[in-house]
Length: 248
Image 1 (cartoon, one colour):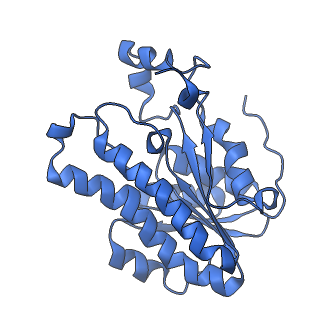
Image 2 (cartoon, one colour):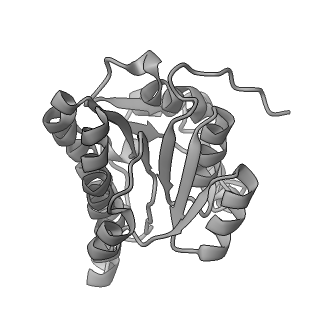
């Protein structure tokens, strides 16, 4: 049974943009914000997925490839959002020597540069409106490393540092920029893997001995976006079942 999320102050009537909203956490975050009375624009490359989600939550759909700087600028020109969730991301599990140049570009262009493109596109509207809140969805792999995810870990570490840099520059404009760093969260994309022997082995390394669920990120995300987190900027909020503090 899904537990009802209480209303967080300062969200109702706001307008939000959620990228990477065609599956997984992006879909969950869009539904979560809609339930808080936020008008949500969902953005991703898959037109059918974002159209269906927008219809479900009475929001708006935007077909967008965040890695395309010109497309981002054109699509968001003149738009004003109070909230941005930079959630679009891709990954690759392979040895560093098996990362091809196109793999490296795809991961960095989406996870790091894409977040920068979108943040820069929405910031002028936030400045004109007197402020806003940006959450970059990073990862504990931006704070710690694991094998076979060199490009992904580098992209998320860069995203954490980008979060800090933008927070420093934009605080004077009332824009708060924070990073949400999840650990292993179960989604439809990884459910089969975590049901396997290899996946079960990874779960045993989490101190809480379980995967996170999308709902485990609700409180941290809403704290960063709502008035309850109004003095928080330039920080990383970790939700990982204790994984970062586990022994090496």
